Amino acid sequence: AATRVALNIPGDAIVFACSGQFRPEKQQDVLLRKFQLLLSSASAPPYLLLMGNGGAIEQEIASLISTLGLQNQVRMISGLKSDVAEWLRASDIYVMHSAAEGASIAAVEAMATGLPSLLPNAPYFSSQVRDEQEGLLFDFGDDQSFVNQASRLVRSAELRSQLGQRARKRAVDMYGMDQHVGALSNVYDTLMAKRRSPLKHNRATYFKGRPS
Image (cartoon, rainbow, N blue to C red; front, side):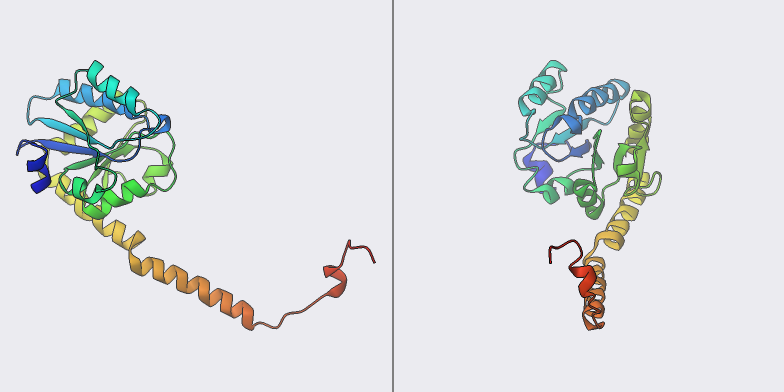
């Protein structure tokens, strides 16, 4: 609540968050154009998109925000990357439009905060966020699919809550400390078992190909 007050965000605004640096593969430019479509299709409540800062195409994104007339609906937040948990807690929906992504740490952070996600239906996201379970996935390249899925989240606080609760549980189950400790323990046990096993040296094989 304090962050929303500090940013002068209206109490009834639906806030989308998109953390991370501005890079071409993140396609924040495409996201902005789809966000503009969402705004044009909506009557109420007001929408706001928080975006991080820094990166190779920061100036291009800033210029595009101005060109699209979104200065009042999109805010580039200087602290969004370093204080990501705080900004996520001030948001209602996490959104990304990456054309390529590994295991997305940003998506996991949003899940752990209890936010529902709005993401492209691509393998690198659907393996983390399951459609209709922890978030909603839209068809990549389909503007109307994005608007439809975003509108569902905007209209229903109950849906956002249900997806957000499941997202937090999945983040804890898959990426929590217990899982990391368990994985490390398994690796340690495997290494120790190998160390205790008698080593069978085969001198001929070891020196194969070496000059005598």
